Length: 202
Length: 308
View 1 (spheres, chains in turn brown, orange):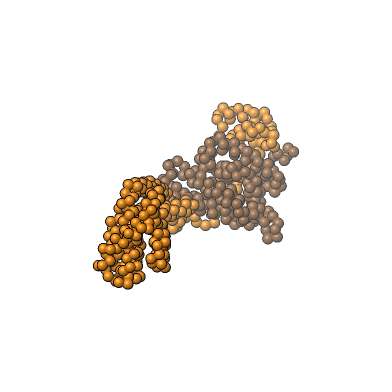
View 2 (tube, rainbow over the protein chains, first blue to last red; view 1 turned 90 degrees about the vertical axis):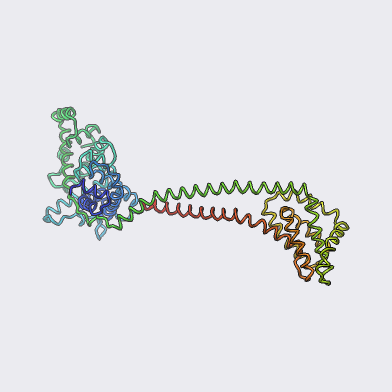
């Protein structure tokens, strides 16, 4: 059964068909939420809320990219969750170890399928990127996560954030520039292939 | 450094990386890139930044986000119930307002018109209406006084009226028209005031008569207030008269018999109550039920709205 058929059945109230769509998109939805929120628990809540909301609003889906439509709901769920978290902050944004010192390689970012060296290198970069993402305004963060981290195209992103294409372009350019400035500060921490050439000049 | 770039150049470089420039824009930028080393460097840095972001590992969803029937069902029910409840609350509120306004309009109309009619009747027939009642009242009073020891029912009936008339002409001939004139304005007051006055009069009358059966002051004090009610219900005069006539002989049988004025009052008050019980309390109940229904529906709708 392809996606269009699954959507059709889900619209008619077939929960099994909808759940197959959930399984298809849950990683994408969770990744967007996680990269935007930087907190696994909040990302989990936002993702679940988004799927419940998507099932409820399924009748409003009128064709086009289902991924973009779903990510719009995920985006809204993230904004809601961020507002909630702002009202009652619970989890620290910076990964903090048992001794209250900031961790360079948080355990929750490690990928067990890699060798320890690769893992250390990637996780350091990942931690640096995640921290730089956190420093961005959420509107910019949303765009850079969708386009660069999740590989969506401009029009899908524009649809997901409900903004014109031009806004996506300008936000993405500024977000990338800020990420570049932020990552430059990490210098030697970054693997050589990501090391920026600006340092050589300066 | 990106800070050296104009916002426009930065956007152009970023879009160029993603192949989002038009062919004209692209060739223009490529020409500039060939000449401008700084611009080339910025492009390279942006490309690396993008590569770093693209290589960010994908995290696995920590659990399944599939919906259980409860999750889906509950949400669907709430979502579909909300517009229904919203409509129901609106209808109940509108109905309540309509009924209340309708009641308000009709009740003020029915309260005003009988009062005016009664006032006119009183003015027209003041002598006719007022006279029999105090006369009979007094007659009964005197009858109790006189006939109690005798306990003769038949003998009492005829002279009772005569005695009453005598007493009236002798003692209160000046006072009788006065209440009638005073009553005319008071009769225009709402019926409820009349009812309470009637109750007061009843209590007052009872107390006074039990304390001092034949005291002329007591009778005089009771009379004006008693006639207010009887006059207010002038259409019930015949009933009141009949009852008084019936009561008068009964009162001769025992010393503790009810004073005729009180008996006369009760039918008058009761005669008014059935009409109000049929229209007013029913409409009040409907209003209360509608108000309660509207409040409950509104509360539930707000609850649903919060959940949705």
